[in-house]
Image (cartoon, rainbow, N blue to C red; front, side, top):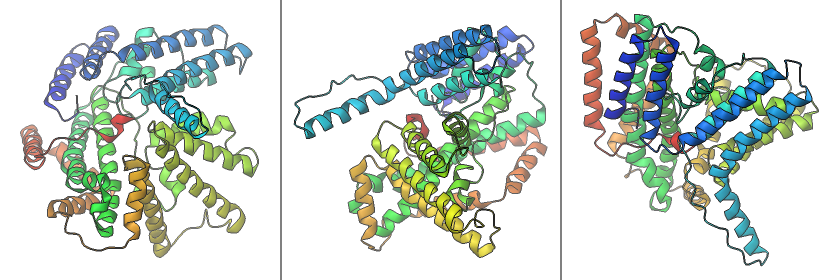
Length: 477
C-alpha cells in the first residue's frame, strides 16, 4: 500500500477521523492505530506481522526482566538479558535477510576449493521493513538498559511501537521516546500544526511522483540496466540523476511519514538536512538518513569504543560501522563494498586531519574552498552510489568502464528528464526559508483554497506520472 495510492488515502482518512473522536481515551486511540497499522502492512502480506509479534514479545519480556533486576548499572544479569534480546533480534534479521547470501557465498567458496557442495535454496521471503523494525527493537532494549527510557509498557504497546504504519516499511528509525514513550499522553493537534503536516505530506508525494519516479523511468533504470548501450556522458548524467533520485525518493517517504505521524500527535525527528551541502564525508553522514546515522553512532560505534581508544582503534571502529551499515542496506556484498569504500574515505580523511593538517577540520573555508569541498564530496557520493544502484557487481563495473571511455553525446536524455532534473536540483538548492514561506502561505490560505491546491497537485501528478509508479527505494531494506 504505497503512500500515494487511493487505498492509503482512504485508510488514512478513516483512521484520522476515528482516532480524533476517541483520542482522549488511551485504549481506543491505540487500538485505532493498531488496526490501521495492521491493515496497512497486511495489504502487502500479513504473515511477517508474526515476526514483529516475536520482536515485541522479546522486548516485553526482556523489559520486565531488566526492571526486575533493578537499575544498577551493568549488572551481570542485566547484561545477559540485553545480550540475549539483541542476539534474538539480530538472529531473526540475519535468518530472513542474510542467510541465503551466506549460504550462496559458502557454496561459491566450496567450489573454489574443490568441494562439491550446493547450498540449499530456502526461499525465505524478506519482510518489508524488517531492518528498520529490528533496529528499533534493539534501540528500545539498549535505551532501557542504559536508563534513558522508562519501562513498564504493555505487550500491545510494544507491538504498536514496531508496527506504527507511517514509518514501518521504510523508516525513519524512531527511538522509543518519540513513540512508545508518548502512548500515555493525550495527543494534541493545532490547526497550524495540522496544516503544516498536511502540506508536508503533499510535498512528499509530489517529490516522489513528479521528480524521483520521472528521473527513474526516464533515464536511470535504462542506463544502469545496460550501460554499454549509452555514452560516457549519458552514464555520467544517469549517475548524478540517481543521486538526486534516491534523495527525493527517500526524503519523500520521510516527509509523508513525519507528516502523517504529526497528524496523530507524534512529532518525529527529521531524517535529512541538506546532505548534498556537505563539504566532506563526515558532514554528509551527519546530514543523510539521520535516523540510521545516529543509530549506528549510538548503538554500534560508541559501544565498540568510539573514539575513546587509540587512533588505530578509532579507525577500526569507523570501518566496522561503515561496512556493517552498508550491509544493512541489502543482502548483497556490493552493499558491504559500498560501505567499505565510504569507510576507507572516512579513514583517509581522519588520518589527514590527524597527521597532515590538524587545523583543516575546524578551519572555516571561504566560498571557493566550500564549493570545492561540496563538489568533491558530491562526486564521491555519486560515484560510490553506482555500487548501490547497479543490479550486481558486474553491472557496476560495466558502468565504471563505460564512464572511462569518455564518449560524448546525450541523445538518450529526454527533455522531460532534463526539465525534471533541473527543477529537482533547483528545489533542493532553495534555502529552508523558502520552504517555510511556502508552508506559511499554505496555512494562511482559506480552507477551500488549500483543498483546491491539493486536488490540483493530484491531477498534475496523475497527468505527468503516466508510467507505472515505482516502489520506494528503501522498501527493499
